[in-house]
Amino acid sequence: MNKMRDVRIEKVVINIGVGAAGEKLVKAQKVLGLVTKRKSVQTLSRSTIRDWGIRLNMPIGAKVTIRGKDAETFVRKALSIKNNSLPAYSFDPQGNFSFGITDYTEFEGMKYDPEIGVVGMDVNVALARPGYRIMRRRIAPKRVSTSHRLTKDDGIAFAREKLGLEVVE
Image 1 (tube, rainbow, N blue to C red):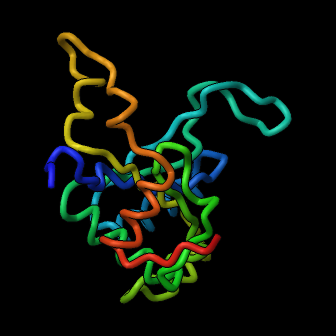
Image 2 (cartoon, one colour; image 1 turned 60 degrees about the vertical axis):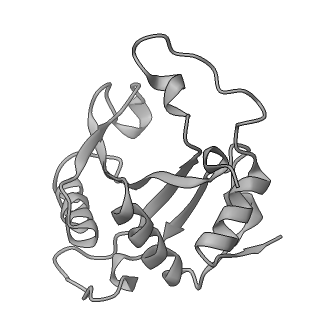
């Protein structure tokens, strides 16, 4: 078996979109800290939407990125909340997959805090093969050939084998 063909979890991004700065954003960051045990980063709006009261570069959410062994551990915890099954439409054409969690209290060991309330989150899992770095390196970036890229079927196969995920068609 060729090691360069192995699929692995590159990163996991946990995102909470609040839509406004202030107390809600602080609560979202607190929830991300409780769930991931890492410090979160604020996400900023990319455009101005007057009807929603959003200005350019206004903080409207929070996210945490996890890589390495911790990423796989977190994905396993999060998928257990979804009963280890996801619909096939959760996978994109590059093999990555995303799913939502409606309430942070569904994680093991989390208790409801009336001060925080009900806060949901999105979990995005990016998959890659060794050698994908050539796209993002600073000196002499190159393309990854089509035969080495991941497909939706590769992502589904990885999720079934390594994560024990049931993919519902």
